[in-house]
Image (cartoon, rainbow, N blue to C red; front, side, top):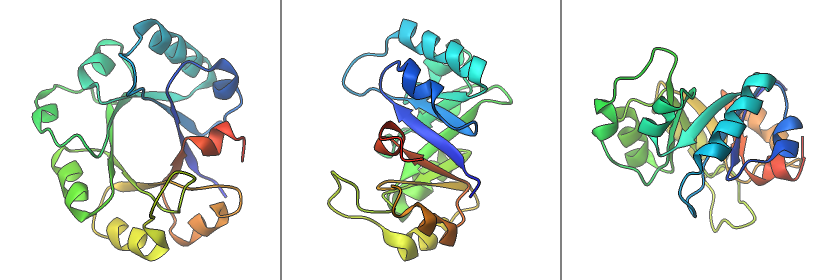
Length: 178
């Protein structure tokens, strides 16, 4: 199994970042506190040393100012002002969607990669898409698709059925399930 991994973090965590697989990208998102630029810069420095890409959630302007690899646009962000930014050539936009309407919104926001979630039932989740609905949504777009939600040691092999571009998670990496 060769995957591109995407790990969500909400704070600088040297030990977590240092133990991630080589094909990992970091998405820094903290919706509980304002962004701490010093922590983002520390994360950027370690990501650069490890060869990881770093994306900032919901802050395109700040991601551009800090010269990060891109930005992550969550499903609740339906704003089209993001198309007004002049993006560098290698700057990538990631977006997440839970249904066809959100998928179309992310396409209009011109994201490069699309997270479709939740694939499986997570610890906190009340429902999941499942394999078939995930495939249905993935077939409705020409974007590179990343699966997110409820992925663990027991069900990661099932992702071979959907052949995603990548796998994303939070607890999956924190629980060291790789």
